[in-house]
Amino acid sequence: MKAGRTPLRVLFYTAYPQRMAGANRSMFELVTNLPDWIKPTVLVGGEGEVARAYQDAGVPCRVLPARGALGRFGRGALAGGAIGRLRTALADLLPFIAQLKRVVAEEKADLVHLNDLRGAMTLAPAARLSGVPVIMHLRGEIPFRGLLHRLTERAPHRIIAVSDGARNSLSPAARNRAVTVYNGTRDISDRGAAPLRWLSALRAEGVAVVSCFASVVPFKGHHHLIRAVGLLNRQGWRDRAAFVCVGDLVEEHHAYQAWLYELMEAEGVDNLTFTGWQPDPFAFYRNADITVLPSVSFERLSYGDAEHDVRGNEGFPRTHLEAMSFSLPVIGTRIAGVPEQVEHGVTGFVVEPSDPQALAQALETLLKSPDLRRQMGHAGRERVEALFSTDAYVAGVTRVYRDLLGDPS
Image: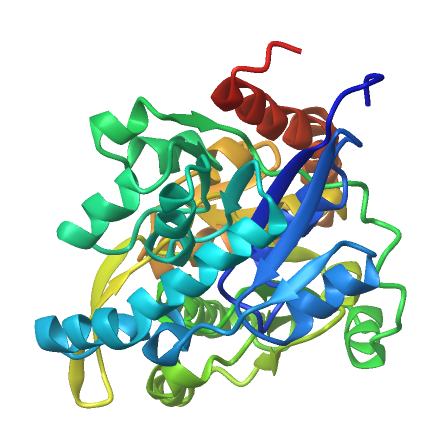
């Protein structure tokens, strides 16, 4: 920090306290690598793994559980139609904004940085009422439309989009207040040293391990992966490839998860495993040969005796960066910022979303060729080191801070 410079007090907010999943890990990467002229405090919407991670890292952290319906996962707070949303606003939202306004004052924040869309409806109004500028990190496409979409775009003074794809999903007015800053990662290839004997044993027998790192929710597209595995199994891969899905079995989507097991039975898929949440996902990267993420932006599904409109909010999946850091080839879908991460045909493959046939073809190409896997994995590691470093990530974010606050230094 320059001599005599007053530290910039930034209040970071994440509404989801339960898991250190992709968006929360990206914020953690930022906060724990800030320059010393920034003094962070992290506000978390409840007790859980996220608060513990910051406390263990020595970062000042406050916990303020969201009120009532605001504490529900995902879009649960929007349930109940117009009347339900009005009830939530009066009973939960307005009192919570008042609480947050007190926190902003107590922390003497110079700047508020929101890590998720829920902050746009809660902490952003509190900060604006206090005269404190607001930055919102757009981690992916906004998964709702109408008035709520417009309010979310207007809440922050500046928007940091994780990819050009996410930025381009904004309205023209919001796009003018947005800048793209790619997420970054340090070299994490030395992590995950814990042995996974069951995977090591499979690989020792010549079975290729394909891992998918994602919470088991509809927009992550596990149903397309199951169908692709069914196609591969019918082509003779059942005993030569094992598929491991690492991610939280989110309670609110139990009907979707039940449907996935029905789909596995119908497709004859018995070489795919759901591990649930894993505190050390890096061990699974270390024991993988290929990674895949079959996310979608929008589609309509039928399961659990109901029709479901699935809207995704993918932006710049952290799992692709982490896989490349582990020198693994990546298969992703052509949505949001994925084509900006994965160089098609060089570091992996980018296929159309909702296309199990294309997914199966890309998987088979890599399953057939260990040499191609090594070549693409090496190219991916070079790409992540050159373009998606933590230093570049932090520098990009702090430039936005200085621009918003009129600081030329």
